[in-house]
Picture 1 (cartoon, one colour):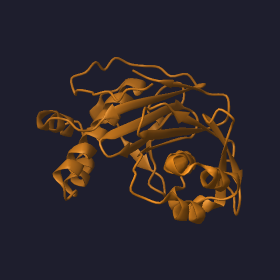
Picture 2: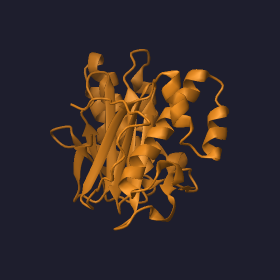
Picture 3: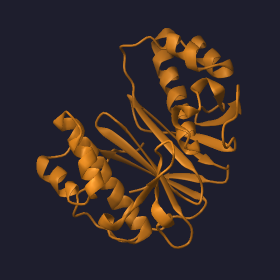
Picture 4: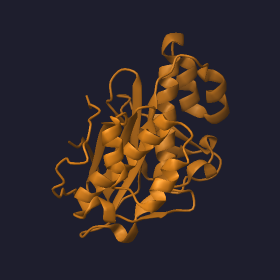
Length: 248
């Protein structure tokens, strides 16, 4: 079971490697003391600081700064550079990547997700990747949303779930589909009802099937993340020849 770690700006920054067949996932907390938030602030670029200052609420601003600071800290270890010198490019749907690949031996790819006070960072080398995270809430009816965005076996699975576990089934499917969208870099330009995810008998792996239109890269496999009660997370990566591990 993954634990949501805490990182300090002064934490070790020795280089770390990742093989082409590996996908690393980091789970971390976003709520930190003000002194830690301000220390992460110093790592950010001028553009990132301007983005942070556009948040209306102080808590949202602090969480965004911590998330971005930890992102830089961890990616810098894979790229063997100082966190402050990383430069990001942004695709048409806003998905970031490390400018010029950022590392020797093949480009480091990554994706960041956050929900309330928690975050996930997925890292790979030379393959597209997406990650999503959601906290399970008990104040919504999942069926109307599921019938709008899901179809086929995924909708059947949610409708067939017992009432007390239906929200859980819904969120599992939701994070799996969001991870696929993020791996494809399409954002909501690829509608949720244009493809489906089907879980294996263990419920830990899902594969993609197209409905209306095409997923940009259908050769995507989704693996669910063991995050503990109340949380659902999924990571999607191109190809089937990859191994998932929680990094520490």
